[in-house]
Length: 62
Image (cartoon, rainbow, N blue to C red; front, side, top):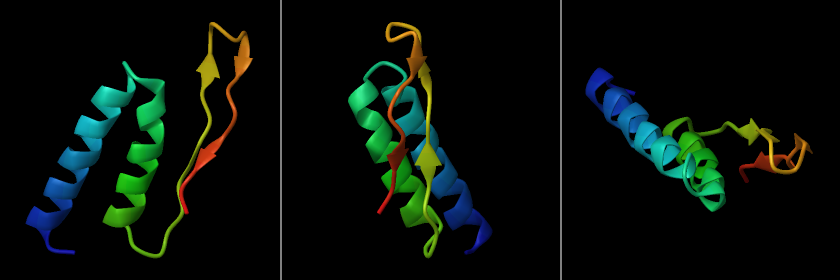
């Protein structure tokens, strides 16, 4: 992936992360964006939700 394309992909994922910080439903978009940026990979994410008092269910791409 050329340097410019990689930079743009990272920036796009960064914007998705910013949005997901305020809308938990957007984390799937983050994972999908990561896998689009890195073809042939899978991304997994698990976070602790203080309102639940425990880890939230894992979200994965693909």
